[in-house]
Length: 194
Image (cartoon, rainbow, N blue to C red; front, side, top):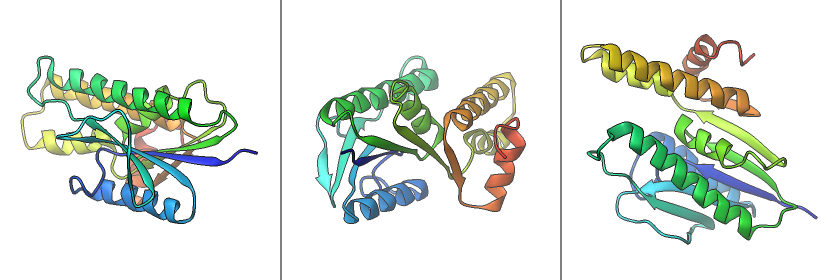
């Protein structure tokens, strides 16, 4: 007999650092745990890097250390670090659970969803749900718009859109929380969504 295992990834556990998307992801994890589901939650933390989870309100919370913002290689290094950590934690979770389980993966952000997708390529029984609070490329462009939009900013926005489009294609369900966000996704998804 299989059971459903929920794995939710967001930038942080809401009670560690406050953020709107993280509040939604944390509330979802707690609600699922209260209904009796087994729930794992993956997020970064500014002070903690542990190899085993803590149990908080019925949720197995896995934290990994946030990368330093001023590291050599900057954002690209940090990007790969997040992917590596999410995939490493997924490997531990999968090895500790029965192979008969059905996994429901839920990324709250393009980077987290990409980590879940790449870490689950060999999992046939995994439903991938991408929760888009705000498209990453649009957020980046809104921040870059206040500065001079140069070649680097154009390339970064292009790469973020490519990453998001990959996540849209590889996800079984894409959900968003407003009509405006849905319109941005449809506009930028290259017809990967209906």
